[in-house]
Length: 200
Length: 100
Image 1 (tube, rainbow over the protein chains, first blue to last red):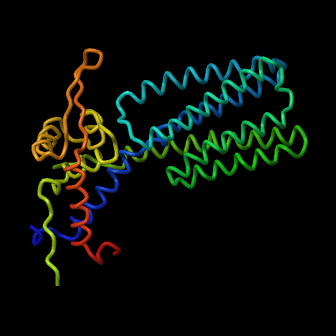
Image 2 (cartoon, each protein chain N blue to C red):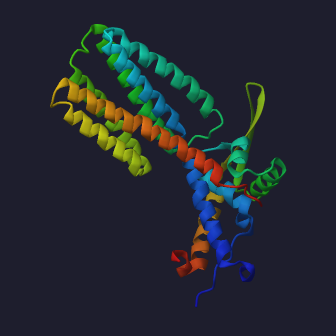
Image 3 (cartoon, chains in turn yellow, cyan):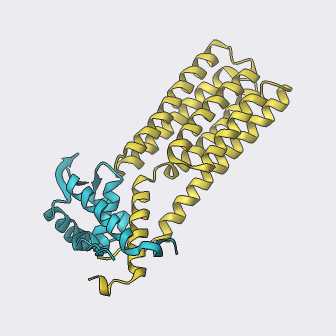
């Protein structure tokens, strides 16, 4: 058999194995839409709270975002097989979602969301933790860059004025939610279009 | 010069190799997911999965979810071993050409 098997064919087999294993483990890029959704929701919550309804802005927007995320995710996950890696990353984000939801719901309803610096620092640190953990598991440099941006935001917001803190937060949301989410969506679409059918 | 290893013909088939590789990265997978990932036809996919099943490389479980039939495939330990040995043989055959 080896006489007829070209080196090119053998390399093709090796590439096929690598791409298929990667395909099976590909999970995070399918969540690009969620990053964009949450980025938009953060902007809406900030705009709403700036208009004078700060008590309800965050709890209501977060609740709507959670419902939309759960509904879309349950429809999306249906056909996708489970992996240990996927479950590990999923657990991080579910735990983050529960922590943020409970924390900001309680802070919002108790009227203790008044310290903007503390609020931005906490939310940024939590997002930095989740992005950092996911990035380290996936060995994904782009997502790790997002984690660094969130950590820098968490530190920077502790200093400077309210306006500076808000600007840093808005920029971090744009880079780490909107841009990163769109990057994920495009990456997934390109991957879908690149590969042709595999024949026996 | 050492003897070159033989490639397992069951694993060597392009679609079968893709299926084993896909299954090695997940716990179990539905037929429809495997079809979407490989873009193979139902007939071809079914035939290749049957060959892998007959070789003991994949295990099949059929069940009903919300009254809809669902066929789940997972790689067996024998299948994982066969894939590992195939990759080792491939690397040995390619030798220095792997870096080229």
